[in-house]
Length: 322
Image 1 (cartoon, rainbow, N blue to C red):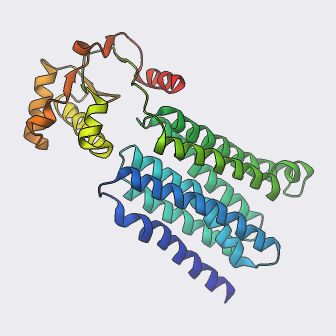
Image 2 (image 1 turned 120 degrees about the horizontal axis):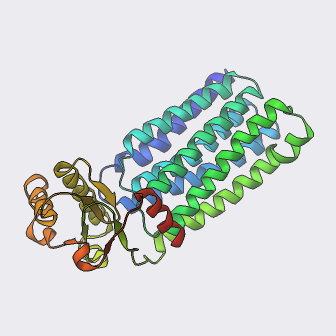
Image 3 (image 1 turned 90 degrees about the vertical axis):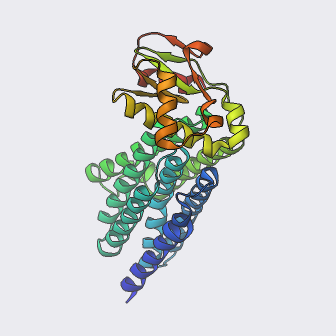
C-alpha cells in the first residue's frame, strides 16, 4: 500500500511540475520568463529533496525517499530545460525526457533496495548535469559569464555523481572513504553549494549587463549578422531578436548547406550574401522592410576579421573572456 501511494504521489508531482507549470508556456512569447520559471522550480526541487531526505533519515519511510530522489533528479533536469529555452531551443522534447527520467528514478527507488537505487539515482544525476553543462556551453547566450558558471557547476556535480558510484561500488558503500566524501552529509553540502552558484548565475543572467559582443572571426566566407544588437533589442525585445537570429541562420542554411553559426548571425559562401539572405528571409520567413534593415555585412562594419581557426575554439575563447 505504501509503495503504491509513493508511486502515485511521485507521478502526480512529476506531472504537475513539468507539465502543468511549464508545458503550457512552451512556444509562447516570453523566453526569459519561461527560463526563470524553470530555474525557480529547479531550485525548489533541490531544496525539497534535502527536506525529504531529512524526513527519511528520521523514519519517514519509502515515500519520503522516493520523493527526495525524484526532486533531486528534477533539479538539474529542469535547469537543463531552462538553459535550452533561453538559448532558443525547443523545450518540449527535453521536458518529456525529464519526466521520463524522473519516473524511472521513482520506480527504481520504490522497488530496488539501497544501495542499488542510490547508484541509479547518482547516474541519473550525472546524466542530467552533464547534459546541462553541454547545452550551456553550446548556447549563444549573453552574458557568457553566468552561462559558463552554470556549465562548470553542472560538470563538477556530474563528475562527483559518477565518482560516488565508482567509490561505492569499489570501496564499499559503508567504507570510510565513501562516508567521508560521498555520503549524505558531503553530498548535501556540495549540492547546496551548487544551488547557490546556479542561483547567482540565474540572477546575473536576468539582471546582468549585456557586454559588447566580441569580434567575429570569419575563416571561409562572409558573415551576415544582426548589426546593432542593443537597438534591435530595444525595438523588438530580446525574445523576438533571438527568433530573428534563428530565422537568419535557417535562411543561411537554405542558401548554403555549409553555413556556420556565428554570434548574431551566420557565415556562408554565396555571391552577394547580404542581398541573398535578405531575399530568402523576405520570401520564406515573411520579413518586412523594417526587419531587413537590421541585417549587416559583418566585414563592412568591421565586426568581422578574416582569419583561419575552428569556430568552436573561437567560441570557447569568447566564453573565457566574458
